[in-house]
Image (tube, rainbow, N blue to C red; front, side, top):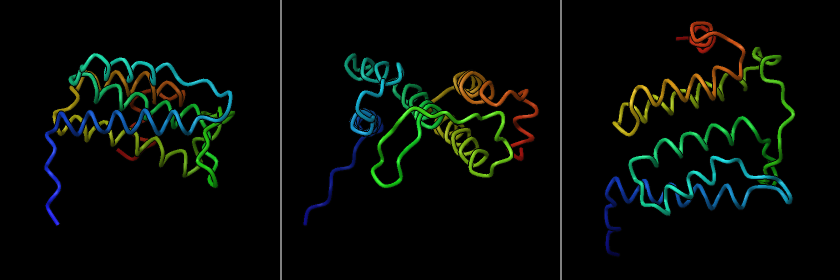
Length: 143
């Protein structure tokens, strides 16, 4: 059997974006509004703006985790009613934030996002949701 062709970084980013758009679109429950970040990712793909794709993917990844609950049996996404600041002591909440934070750091380490992009995204989309200061947030995550 012939080997699969190796994709370039640009091709992998495009495939990742396409797969994420399809997955997110299909997972939204009936009548559930898509986050604006989904449209931003679609626009970046339509414009072949490969440089912005990692940021748009990261933003959508965060918003999916923060705005929606996923039904374990179907994967259907519905708007969450979860009160993050009131549940910071829940291990799963901390684990989700740590995962999203770490993912951004990995993208930065790979040169796909700048330090400023990660910092701004983490502050605006993660830290602000907790009600913590950046210093408290780092301590809460164990950094």
